[in-house]
Length: 288
Image (tube, rainbow, N blue to C red; front, side, top):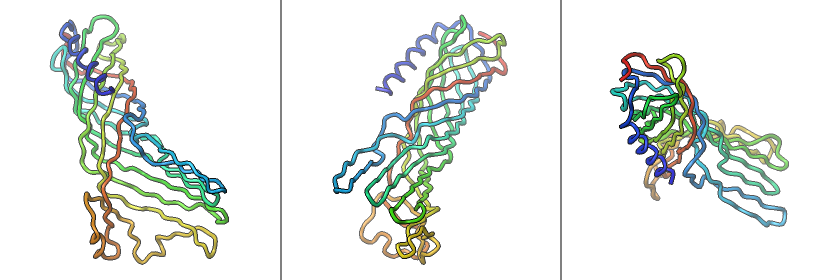
């Protein structure tokens, strides 16, 4: 439904563009900030609660890791009164999402995940009429994550154990192409070269896991009843993980100490739907 709505908005603006009367042409720059909410949610993990009698409930946790604040710089060129091409540079400060929760009489555990991503977004834009105080526009583009890391932090508290056990994992993904669709309006200001804009934006993006690293692993020592750094004690720390599409009984059988461990690959949802506001400036051309 979200995809159809975005496509309908874009096609409607495309038709409106045919009646455009005046619009600035030439190079432009846009600087915007926005906030997105997770969309097309997947099952991320579970919430498990068990009481002293052994009765328990377990429910799914749904969401994506694509929500959060983002900053976007878009540089482009308006070829005519209706059409332009831009290249966006976007940095996502992903919201913290709870992936798993576990509670029983002897232990509580919680895993939270967030991401940081730098993306490029080549895009094609259609603009409507430039008459009046507002000008509608819309567009489609690609989303190309250039670099980024997803951080997973788990904290465990045990009855009778002093301190908090922790595990921190940093994951990176394979090269991926996503897409975006956006629609908004420019608002005129007294300066003819400047516009204020507000837009709705949908991003469709899934990233397949490539590798991960366990950067911290603190677990309980049942002898001392304290939390210790397990990684310092291991002869083979196996902190590096490579994700593959198939494993069998021989996988990891002949690895040497310190070599990466192979695990089955997963696919993670980073889709979002949100709003962005900012300032656009034209650097040349005239009005057609």
